[in-house]
Image (cartoon, rainbow, N blue to C red; front, side, top):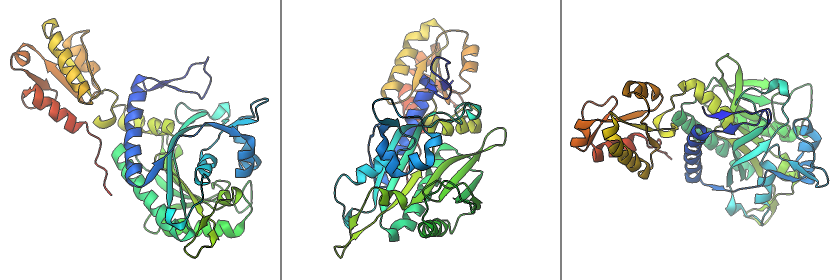
Length: 382
C-alpha cells in the first residue's frame, strides 16, 4: 500500500506509507536530476504566506473559492500554488538579460479547498505535493522554453511509464469568467503555446485556462475512463506585472519578463494514482518500493541471506530479507518485487544466489552488480 487516509487526519489528506514514500523518493530524485541537467536551480519555500501576496498575484480575487481561509490573527494563507513564491525568488535581486532564462524548480506542498464530493483517493486531494517550476524569460525566448518543457515532459513520461491520453490546449472561455482582463496579453500567450505545439497533436478546449493565462495540459485516463490533467505548461504575463518583475536588456532599457509555469509530472499524488493503475502495482525496478526480496530456503541460510540483503542496501538498493512462511508463500508474496534472490544450501556453499528468472547461479558479487545495473534509473539525455 502506497498511502492511507485516516478520519482523524481528515479527508483529502493522505499519509504516504513506507512503500509509497520509497517509490516517491526515487521518482523525486530522478526529476530533480532531470531538471538540474536542464538548467533548473532548485529552491525551498514555505507553504503559506501573507494574504497580500495572493492579492497581488490574483489568487484571492480570482481563485479564492479553491483556497483555505486566512489563519486568524496572523494574516497568513495556505498557498494554493507555488508561483508567487517563485516570483519572489526572481525579485530577490536585480536581473539582466544575461540571467535569462532563469529556471526555478521546487517540489513543494500546497493546499486547495476541494469539495468533499470531488475528493477521490490520490486522484484528487487537498494536501498536494507538486513537481513545480517556473521559467522567467524574455518574450522572444518563450516559444523555445515551452518547447524545452515539452521535451522534458516526454522524457519523464517515458521513464515513468505515463500513458498519455491526449494533449489539450486550454483556453479562456469566450463567455468570460474569472480571468485576468488583458485581451492583448491573452492573444500573445495563446500564440506562444500554439507555436510551441507545432509538432504536437492537440485539442483546443475553451474554458479550461488558468485565471492568468492559457495552458497546455497533458491528460491521462483512470480505470473508469475519466480524464485527469497531469503535466502542464502555462504562459503568464500577468504575475510579472503584478509583482513588478523586470530585467535590463542589452541596450540598458528595463523590460518585463514572461513567466512560464510548468510541471513535468504534475501532482505526485495523482501521478502515483495513475502509475499504480498503469503498472498494476508492479512498478519498474528503478522506482519499485522494494527492488530485491532475499529469500533463504531454510533457517540455515538466514544469516547469509541477511548478509546479502545488507550488501544490496549498502549498494543503494531497496532490499529486504524475508524469513516468515514457506518459500513458496514468500515467492508468491513477492510477486510485485522486480527481483527475488533465493539462497539455499547450494547457493551458500558456492557463495552464490539464484535470481528469479535467471538462467543460472550467479556469484554474490556478480548478482549484486547485475541488480545495481538493472535497478538504475533511466539515463537522462540532453
